[in-house]
Length: 419
Ligand SMILES: *Cc1c(COP(=O)(O)O)cnc(C)c1O
Image 1 (cartoon, rainbow, N blue to C red):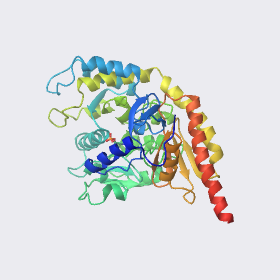
Image 2: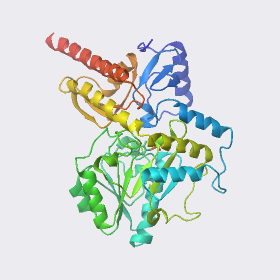
Image 3: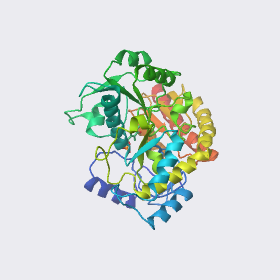
Image 4: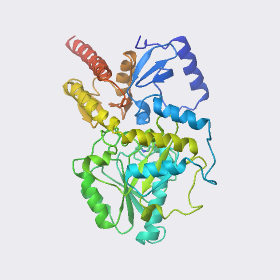
């Protein structure tokens, strides 16, 4: 059975009412109450099944409850879960080495949420700027991009241009300057002797799967090297196989100075984030200068090690490429017929719905009724990012559902117009 009725059934209604009553309204969820997940599919409290095409904003790249990761988590739960970094544990060393090898970097610094890893990259970049680059005290500047999403802390929203994310949260942290995304000339013009880093997403996920122009990442690499500026890639959503490569920067064979990782690094089980860089950068971190109670804990490290091993098979990168081609082929005919544009990289698509036809929210509500979970962003864009374990039939199910939703809305619009 799949697809939800327009009105939530009693069990769902209760959970929704309870959540709305006692949990702050910082999200506007679709009316579905999920109780179980398996691979690319979830089941709600009434037993209806849905294809998960959001995949926890790419935290679930390996699907719901991937056997290998769950088994490893169970094993570690039965041994040791937390020590704090006041002591060593027997899981962090192997995780740090594995992640350093995956990124090709000499060191990693583990944290928990993505925002914490971004904060870590900002702190490390500034400290590197003062101690290594020789920037005057207090003058360090970091360049960011319009339309960015890097998380929710006060400092991170200081360089967001999303009015909803920033309203009434000031005063904001100074030291950031934003330039148009993908505009290499704007970056070049903004670089001065105080710029220590350029912080960017190789694909803007929350922005609507926005791809930079071809060559931007390579040109940015060259520019950063020329000016002694750190290239800091936020690969939290784009990285770890989503785009068909281990890192989205791999599409232009570019290696940033700092990788910021999160989301899928925790295998959809546990929040795990990290930054990875060479010792000349991460070496500026000294005891007491940064930390986290849970960062690098043995449960996280055990899961993270298994995630890295999973990525090293290359299977998920391959699946993202092949299935992404199928998704792209399925979406292409919609362009010009209710869809304004489609952007695809790997198994990741941004679909701009014609706002005259339906809002993004309406499309997601109608997809829900057809057994597909997806999330709108910026009003009329739908982001499609199913777990990389989906089958070809699942992709066809998604394309058929979206084609139906848009096709029937167009048919209704045409009937209304000819009346
Ligand atoms: C989700 C996300 C973050 C923030 O991660 P949290 O775990 O939600 O703090 C940062 N950067 C990007 C690109 C993201 O997609």
